[in-house]
Length: 489
Image (cartoon, rainbow, N blue to C red):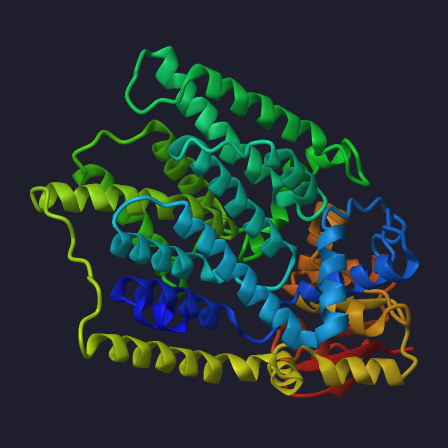
């Protein structure tokens, strides 16, 4: 048995193994996401009280308001993972989940192996901007599972559609991104339905299979109601997306293509269009719809790029293989055969070398000390300790990016002004926050309206400079990252 495993490591298997080791190593990094903290705090609250909060308990600006906590199940998973394994466990969970996502994407792709490997790697690079430990990660995994099931149904004639409602039930209780599941199912229904409507027989699924997809998709839509917020969850994604101030947040804004991190998305979008044009086969309507719809969504909001990467990877693999076949006159890309002589030990040497490099890269990210050092670069640990030790007036004004961390560190001693729960606060509070934080001419109004007596913000912010010059505010703490002010009596 050992001997058979040893000789099985040919070039193709080596390439695939290296691909997923590389994705795991890329995805393993210290846990620093600023939204993680209020998810941790909420998961802790749910686990300890055995109840899901229906009203806000963490802020003073929205305290008691209805809170549609669409991520409660993910929050419990995140908290229990942290409780059992610390931040290293969360880093490992993040890397493992992302690796599983792209394993499903790779298995759900067709075409030549080397082109599939390239497309999967490019998809991973394009989506890397969203690789953070938060409920969005579980939405990413469930989207990959949906796509894999749809691939098996259409391309491999294997019917696992009955799993869609079960996955949707998990999705609706894990993240509001469940809407992507209906888009993933709805576009094949539109694409395949159009083929029947206009009499295109090529590549279309049978009418019976189309009806089955419609039935299981409709059942999936119905089970969304089985969540603590019942029917309200149907409207939640639309209500959140309509909040105008969200456009001030990087993940909700259009991608800034001057930043290198968005370039893999550009490459993937352009390559997908080029391969569609170069392949001899007419593009499948469903594939086109996936590219157009998710490409459009990604151009509107950077957070959607991860979904585009999922749908574009199999499209790029399929039409890239067809384009190569057409361009080379039917010649297949070269493939590695059975390793001969020195090739087999060389393959194992390369694999062990890659594994060693992965261990060296990943190991530090799993340690508490490395996570603490990374977190202290962007989070006000010392300033929060100062607030905890001193009985300052509890009506805080805080940086949006620090709200979640302050909830985790200081609740219930202090309640925050704002954090990442954008829908809870709505446009009114978000606008008031921006008035003050960006030091507008009306910066005093929010502080008076909400009776703010303590402020913790970035030391290098414009608002901090303004408060330093104001006779009504006294600086009581400062470090390299944060500054704390209190109102003069």
